[in-house]
Amino acid sequence: MRNVSEATVTEAVTEKFAGCDSPRLKQIIGALVRHLHAFVREIEPNEAEWFAAIKFLTETGHMCDDKRQEFVLLSDVLGVSTFVELINNRKEAGMTETSVLGPFFVEGAPALPMGASIVQDATPADLLVEGMVHDKDGKPVAGAVLDAWQTAPNGKYDVQDPSQPEMNLRGRFTTGADGTFSFRTCLPKEYPVPTDGPVGALLRATGRHPWRPAHLHFMIEAPGFKKLITALYFEGDQYLDSDTVFGVKDSLVVAPAAHGDEGNSRISYSFGLERAA
Ligand code: BEZ
Ligand code: FE
Image 1 (tube, protein in one colour):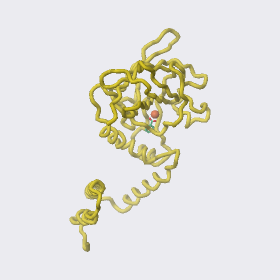
Image 2 (tube, helix red, strand yellow):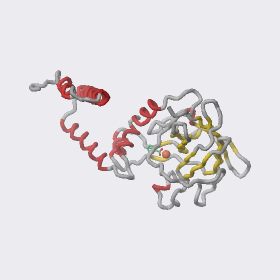
Image 3 (tube, protein in one colour):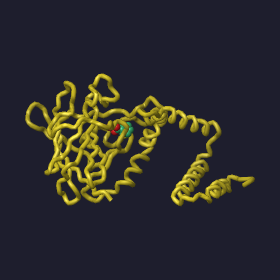
Image 4 (cartoon, protein in one colour):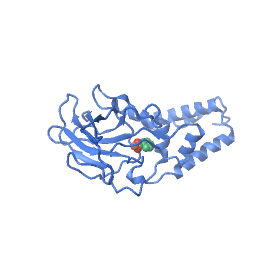
């Protein structure tokens, strides 16, 4: 393998992996080498640029621990998280589409009775969220555990904001025989993804804003069904068409309707779960 040239380097590297026993790993590493080399061939980075790229990835790694995952955020803003999610969740018509999980899901949200509020401070719980979990034939799914989480009106999740009670705006509800659910909350707020790391620097350097439209996250699990990770977005939000992590789908946008007096509102949404393979 001497005297590799610009013309032969890709083939030389590919051949090095010829003995790989796993067909899938061989396919993956082969594609990685091919696409990476094509990228370098197109960009022709100078050495300062190449070291800047290494430094960027190093800083991204240094920003990762059990609470912060800058590589996931990088994958999010490059649209790769959504791309992988789309490939793995090709939906039949009528089944609920998925949306990004994000880094703010917390295990062990309080299990609450139907109709309860997930607001744990003095914020008015003026939004009623109700609906049903159903299968592909529209039949109710009983015993579905619906985990919901969202930001407070200041655009922050409880885990980002010491002024909020622990587990504020998080709750778990289990559907009964009729598959329905309901809970009360407040309207979530748009917020920027974390910008204090290398991904934030990348967004600034490229003139991109860091905002996500307001949304209400859901994770829904039921025995015999595929876990659904999704979110609902709100009609009229200024960031619906420019979500920095590409999570918005038309089918997930809702318009709260007035509910009773005193400025309360209500959304109703039915989640269609696919059977597990
Ligand atoms: C979120 O919706 O919680 C989120 C998703 C991707 C990156 C940052 C936050
Ligand atoms: Fe979120």
